[in-house]
Amino acid sequence: MSINMTGTSSDQYSASEQGLGYIYQPRFALLRLLQLPESTSVLIEKDDDLDFIDNNGVKTLASLKHKGVGDRLTDLSTDFWKSVRIWLARYNRDGRSEANIRFFLFSTGTVSNTSFLRHFLVEPPKEEEVPTSLSQLATDVLAKTKSELIGAIATEFQYLNKNEQEDFLSRIVIFDGSPRIADVPAIIKDQHMRSVRRENRDAIFERLEGWWNDTIVNLLVGKRTEPIFGYEISDKLSAFSEEYQSDNLPITFRGKEPSGGVDGENDTRLFVAQLREIGIASNRIRNAILDYYRAFEQRSAWARENLLVSGEIEEYEDRLVDEWSRYRDVVFEELDEESADAVLLDAGKALYRWMDLESGNINALRIRERVTEPYVVRGGFHILANTKPVPRVYWHPRFLSRVGELLRAAG
Image (cartoon, rainbow, N blue to C red; front, side, top):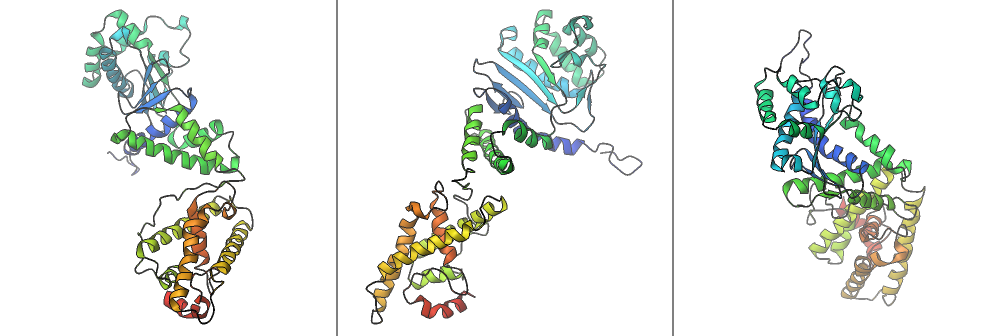
């Protein structure tokens, strides 16, 4: 990389634009598939950067070029001719004029007004401005090159007869001035998410692109072999949008675990200490820690996205405490000061078993009607069991008399 006299790189876009090009492919594919009929499907890095197939089986090979700001496409731009080399190979493979295939070049750069490439634009010059055939224009341009790379492509092009050259070139369309990678999210949100409430578009787009990137990775590593269809994006966008309705909340921590893992043996938090007091097995303690983590992080995510109504969490926790206290009174009803330790332990386990196995399925304990994820409820109880100085829920009947000791043990 050369440096100019001012100390800045004279090739400042080469590395960054090449890197952007790789991550531009999936983001641009998402945008383009949203712009096309839902029956259209896409493959990535198969015959070209992107392969689009419509419901009639017509395949469009798309080359993507994410260039530096101000970049221009001229007669002998390698971006164009490298794509031509790829397209020629596919054209020959698929029977030349019998091929059911088109070729698109999407570039963030713009075609020079003096280049013959302007005849491949979506809106080419009017017919009277074209002095000769496309094949002759291409031949004349290629005759001027001194590039070995482009010269080799010219040789391949000349293997086609005149009719095939014209047919091949007629299949090419250049979309110059294509949106840059940083502009794509705003375009998707403004043009393809109008049915989504404005305040939720950022969050829903982030989830949509996360799902999309995972799907693209599965496609690239071979876990998925069939192309991705446009209707899959529509279905996923609709599903995400449903989670942001007034009677619902998005669930984004299902299956997630803390980055540092789970260490139930050495966890000193009060809700874990409470479980040890009633003899809960280590594997169930691990599940409790995961429920606590997922519920806590989920609440934080809802708060960051401003999805909660003022006082909603407090009201929800009051409902959990009320239901817990009702069931506690039933389970502890026959206990008294003379009850043996084993009886007290069994009562505590019974109360916890209700919370662990049943509470997640009680409709009245949902934070909102359509939030059915059990970890929201179970984790909510563990959060209440962890509050200080006195936890709002507990499991062992004699817990309140030994809370100080447990708090000291929990640090």
